[in-house]
Length: 192
Length: 192
DNA sequence: TTCGCCATGTAATGTGTTACATGATTGT
DNA sequence: ACAATCATGTAACACATTACATGGCGAA
Image 1 (tube, protein in one colour):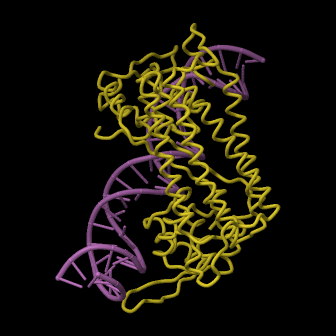
Image 2: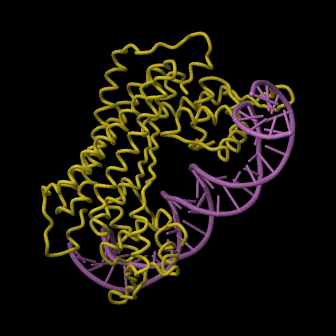
Image 3: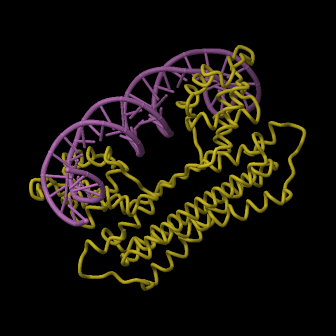
């Protein structure tokens, strides 16, 4: 393991909290990190095997009745790898948003849709914020750091909802631009 | 073309603004939509061929001296496809953030790192916000909608920077939790 | 003549989702 | 008996980056 894969990072972290089966990892991911770090079975099971072969985790057979089940836990090497990753600076982040792409082209494709797109995006973000607020209300408190993560999810989505709501109004009213386009050279109008 | 690919959407939009070569599409993407919708050569060139075969765009040879170059523009079918996509509701978005993952596990791995992680993330977001502000200052104004997109990038990243800065202080001071964990069953402590 | 940019493209690799297949257990 | 949930896994496909290969043009 020279580099942990994206899925390896969630798995190792989940197992640091407590030992789990692949199924439990998946269902906990779906109830917690999904909004900023998802993982599917197609990644989890193969990754569990790789991590096991690399000696970072160890599986123990513990069937429930006739139903097979493997509980994984971190090895010492796994803890070390996890701590190394966790202590390294430089985190990646990605933001991909189709509404922004549509808005970017709205002037060329359908200027009147700009307000509508904004309102749709605002609604979407508000729904996510509400879903996360339900999580907050329904769950007993976690430790401070993972509660902060949940809080961030709520606040971020609320921010997005508010921002696009305000922007939709601005489009409705046709708020003038602070900066006007230079009409000469169309090449130069593209922001660099 | 039953469904436009992610790359097809940027390409069609870029060509709606004006005809371009593959190289120009890539460099404009890098200067504009990159923060919320990236595309690499490995996607652009094959996609240009597919779109051309599907009749949505049309390429014209226009070499500069002995340097080959193909300028693409939308066909009528391409305009139609673009407008269809643009008018559909339901936009996808993805947010992936490694700092959040680290924070989520901080309690189990290294509780003292929580403040540090927050501060790193705040700095990162502030840098992105500054980079986008430089774009704003250096470029002549675009149309209202694509200017809004730029503004959103700035505001969003500034929001993230502020949020994590505040959170870092909270971690420093060990602000008490609003909700305390129920100590009995570790299973139940996982927020659902 | 060398460097940076314009210009096109492919191969290898990595990342990730969806759908499917299989089968046991628990609760209604 | 049936549905939901527990549990593991694979195959097909889609998406995306990186690195490489090729070569012309213009300026220092």
